[in-house]
Picture 1 (cartoon, helix red, strand yellow):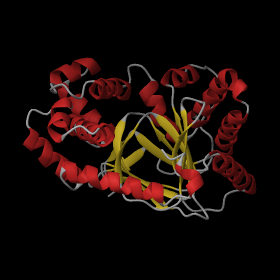
Picture 2 (picture 1 turned 135 degrees about the horizontal axis):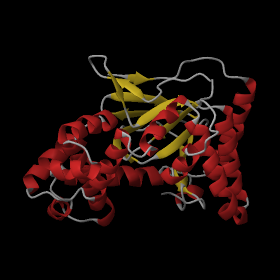
Picture 3 (picture 1 turned 45 degrees about the vertical axis):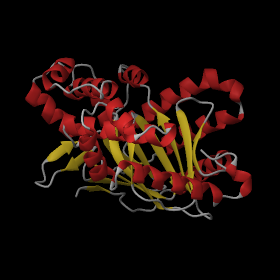
Picture 4 (picture 1 turned 180 degrees about the vertical axis):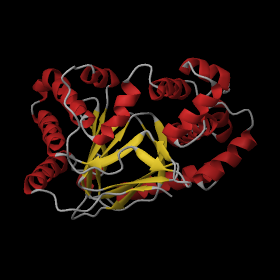
Amino acid sequence: MAKHIQAHREPALAVIEMQQALARKLAAHTQSEGEHPTRISALALFRHTAPGACHPAMCEPSLSIFVQGRKLINLGGTEYLCDRASFLVSSIDVPIQSQILEASEAVPFLAMRLRLDMSAVQEVLSWEDLPELEAHTAFGAGYARSEKGSPERRGLAVGETPIGLLAAATRLLELLETPEDIPFLAPLIQREIAYRVIRTPQGERLRAIATRGDLSNRTARAIAWLRANYTKPLHMEELAGVAHMGVSTLHHQFRALTAMSPLQYQKQLRLQAARQRMLTDGIDVTSAAYEVGYESVSQFSREYSRFFGQPPMRDVRTLRLAGTQAIHSQPAQYRAHSH
């Protein structure tokens, strides 16, 4: 199993101070457990006070910056270990496995996630005077290795957060304290953040995805189409037409970016969507199966059990029980704000 793990070294004092400043601001805006949407529509903040079980999630094109605790993300057997010095960039929509490894009441897991505007990324890339990559320590620069050791480009990359990116992220959080400034200043800071990411080795993935005509860019169009149409039967010729490439080329490029085939990708989208509908809207197994595109309820139940570890209704009951326990275990003043 390939791993992307931070190369341990002592960061500069200025970087430590900036990490601590960002952590304080994140803590101030996340008084309760879980995910916190903000007045900046693309920005979400996270706080967790205990390690958690591994769970499936959907990762969209985004930047995540971690300032406390540790998190492990798994994409098709490649592990991305993120700690307080890390940032994670995702250039595509992709199903992942996510797990909080280190978090406590005294030192909670704190992170921020900014949804990336690919048109802003393309605008930055079109700048003729765009400088070369920053010369800072990098690791996991968007490349994973298969069992045979051949390099494969993935849609995720993890790196050491440079001070310029920390500073821009801090200024974005500061806007939450002056909401009247958000409409004008937030887009400018988000553009700067895209610039800061592009200048890192990990930004190479964004460059490829945002460059029209690049195979990664065309594959990303197929991924976006499949996510929007996952309930429909999958025809590889139709998907290849969306990407303007041959079926075999698309299959290879799709697996390189997502670590799975288009059929596996569609299956994970369907199962996660069905789980969410049963959990939040209370629909039954049969309705969920048909709604996400399955023609056989028994096939849906078998694939759901293999993916989530137990049959649909038992899994949903377990999730509801865990959610209820989590709410009642919180201090009373926080329960009203739980997500």
